[in-house]
Length: 208
Ligand code: GRF
Image (cartoon, rainbow, N blue to C red; front, side):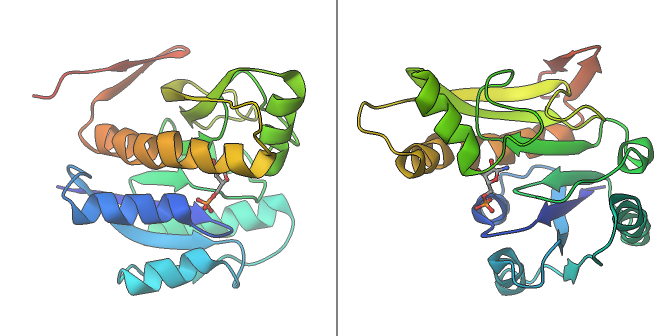
């Protein structure tokens, strides 16, 4: 049976779009985008979900514990197998990972363990990479655990940092060259049961 995927969003939803497009091309093998849950009613991602015919939901506001409880309840109602954080800006508590152990994926726009951790999100990540002077940056898909950006790494891909980059141009290159490819790949691998977590290491099993 296809695994039911919920995508958590807060903003523009280009990573959600990459998942929708991949599904359209038949590339989310054994996976089905079943719901989009947004922390904000204004998120453009909800519009993308609507156009793709995927049910969209807005999460209630409140403290992290209350929001997480509402989120887990909704995920259970929807019979979700995989939770994907795609630009989800809300802090959640451990109840989510306890309810979905090794079944919550996040995409982060750097090569973890560089430029990540508490407060390092959105354009800040690219500002930090430029300030440090790195020549490559990239994106990471990882399982989410209680420690911010520190869960087992599923996939990583690098992109060049160019001399005249601004945080915006670097962000765009990393999205195009890394994020929009990696996230559908990781989701598809999960849905085929091809990700085996062994401590910090994720082993990618061959297709059957
Ligand atoms: C992406 O850069 C993602 O890596 C980060 O937040 C951004 C979300 O962009 N976690 P979008 O909403 O998918 O367009």
